[in-house]
Structure formats: C-alpha cells, structure tokens
Length: 68
Image (tube, rainbow, N blue to C red):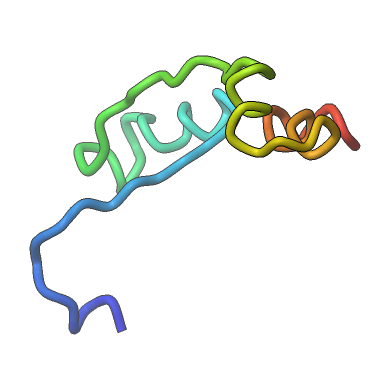
C-alpha cells in the first residue's frame, strides 16, 4: 500500500528509548539517512493538566511508563 503513495510528505518515527535510536542510526541500518534525530524534552505535568483537565489522566499521558 505504501508503494502506491505519492513520493512527497513527511514520515515521523517516534521512539521512547535510546535503544530504538541506536538501531535506526546504526551504520548498518537500512533506515540510515532517512531520518533526522530530534530530542523532545519531557512534558511538564502542569502543561498536560492544562490541556486535559483530569489529574490522573494527565499523569498517564505525561509518562505512560510510570503507570505500569
């Protein structure tokens, strides 16, 4: 299906660990050169709460790993 799409646009790959980043940017990776790394900082609880309005949901959305 992807092969039928137009050849323009933006593909965003999101990973939450450096292990994923290491595999994508490894010198033997077939994806090398297709992505550009961009670090995104941790979202503050207050920012999420102001958008969502629910304290518990805000904690989960800020960092889902803390809920497991």
